[in-house]
Image (cartoon, rainbow, N blue to C red; front, top):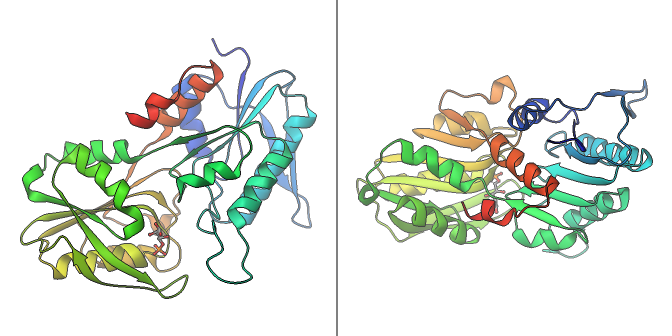
Amino acid sequence: MYEYLTLISGRAHPTLAQEIADYLGIPLGRVALGNFPDGEISFQVNHNIRGRDVFLIQPTGPPVNDNLMELLIMIDACVRASAERITAVIPYFGYARQDRKDAGRVPITSKLVANLIVKAGANRVLTMDLHAAQIQGFFDIPVDHLYAAPILDDYFLSLGMDSDEIVIVSPDEGSIKRALQHVHRLGGRLAIVDKRRSSATETKQANLIGGPLDGKTALIFDDMISTGGSIVGAVQVARRHGARKIYVGATHPVLCGPAPSRLQEAGICEVVVANTLPLRPEQRIPNLRVVSVAPLLGEAIRRIHRNESVSNLFEN
Ligand code: R5P
């Protein structure tokens, strides 16, 4: 059925790659991945991929530069091995937040990364919840952009919450559109936290547009949790404005630095994230729940391979 399909995993997230392979019912390609004594990455595909439709699975999360370089090296190897088509499957696209010049003399690193991936020889990209959807346009090759929100929402729906009792809270103005889609699926009404960023690691949140939340259950959604500053700030605002229970949903659990302890101590009922990135033991806090996007990615790969429409996966 998938005679010409080859799935190859980098070292960034082999568990997710295996789940995708299980969904498709095919084995992962056999590769040798390692490091030379000086740290340079070594890579070899241990079987013929000439003329094959190759999907390279590699989220570019921490260590971002190593995972990105490994992806580029894997693409190069597949080009030189005469693969027919190479799709970079990047469930989490690192550097996405550097997507514009927001100060003098700064780079647009997400455009640079897109250039590198295209230049290395990728023919397509399959990714998920880009920090800004416009990043698709940084690639001069087709990009299929999936959303984890319906999967997060299915989990919240399974909790049987009364839609009259919930308020969907956008943690900043940039997330309003995403929050409205959650309102559409989960019901409830919208509230927006007024977030001001003072530096890459510091944010200030105080006001809530659409409050008070007296006795309601607040569901706060973001695309990623990095240091946890944005989400925990939003949690505090929701609580100050009267939320009785607070849940958090986010696609990408970057969870760096103080994030795990911040999330554990913020009094959040549950933090629901997708498995776009692997979790280290110290990131597996008791109130964290992980939902799998492997079936969605697997189905998208199946459809891309067969030249079927992927767009209804965006919607459903
Ligand atoms: C910002 O616009 C993003 O959507 C996230 O809210 C932010 O990048 C998360 O970072 P942190 O967890 O460090 O606040």
